[in-house]
Image (cartoon, rainbow over all chains, first blue to last red; front, side, top):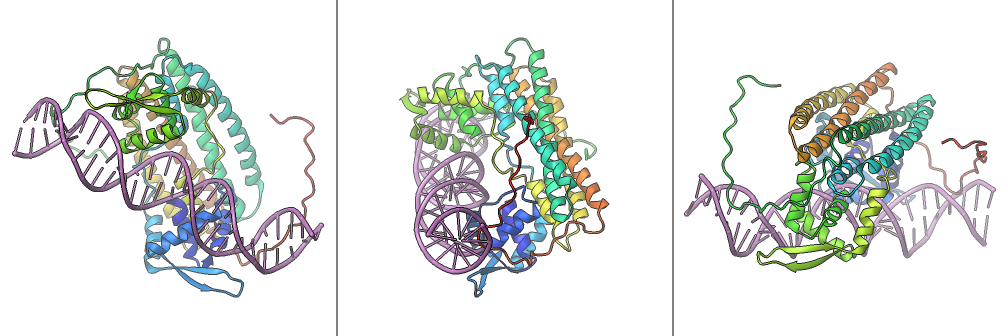
Length: 206
Length: 206
DNA sequence: ACAGCCATGTAACTTGTTACATGATTTT
DNA sequence: AAAATCATGTAACAAGTTACATGGCTGT
């Protein structure tokens, strides 16, 4: 939903046409997040369907201008006011791959981890180079670009540390520690035995 | 593609029926990544269409067993042998939101950052609690669960550090440093002026 | 003239989510 | 009897990507 909300937020600054929205989005993220043009037009149609934006006039150049609606403005405010969601299942390719691979008998998890580590390190190097270029460049566009790249550097560093951490933990365990055969347990049907109730904490924990 | 490849990798261990695949996937990720059942059936159909899996027999309980094909096995091997892709545009909700918000005049980026920091810290606390529980539990399932949760802890820590980093950098700049009005530049059409050729580096940089 | 951007739009497709319908089984 | 799981499947939808069609404009 980030693209959708971002485009709406840009539209909040004034009427735009589709192609312009893409340019603005890429400019504001410092070119670090290319946006497909087709997606802009799709998104605009969906925003219109949801009553958050409305198709406006076409100027002499054939530019179709879009405007934000009151509901759209409220949506942008909500987006900015409330933190990003953490509910959904995080589908992290790297993490899930390692977790699943570690459970597969006959798969050399060590090799998988080594290959991922190499690739992550290479990726990190490339990111650091881009990030330091961006940090040296002047102007507000370079600033947001630099921030986005920094975030990726931080994320890649965390991945790399985790890969090393995972390799250590898996190595500490005897042999292919986490391997799991297909479960042979017959599934139990019907209502499961009720778990004992968890007592309410006497004090709030947060 | 992670779910798809993971299911195929599990299928590589022996024939499974749909529901079982979901159970196995969740078991192998230690329950840290719930998987929608509907998606399993969809995925199986698509694997069949792509020739990577085949619908097999139905047993007396009505379980529809699926088998991996040779092409499927090759696909699993490829998945395990090659590191996860880093090409696509990373659509990080948090990062893009902050980057775009920082360019919006009239938006108190400081407040946005503070709210995100609070939420990230709370999320991190919850993750740490889960991760330390999982680390103490015995068995291979707890190990993969623990690894997945550790990865999320590392990622959340990186996000938190980045949020602080971003707040500092934005504060260091005068006022709403990164705000950008809608570009008033007339776009230039036609072929752009040719850039001077970049000389090839004399030495490999990696 | 041609390459290449500017600009709009459509269609098909992918992965993934959600909701629904159906029915058997089993425990409380 | 009710609740909850086991198990299959369908349909609709959401977000996003890719490819295509169309045409205007402009610098080399």
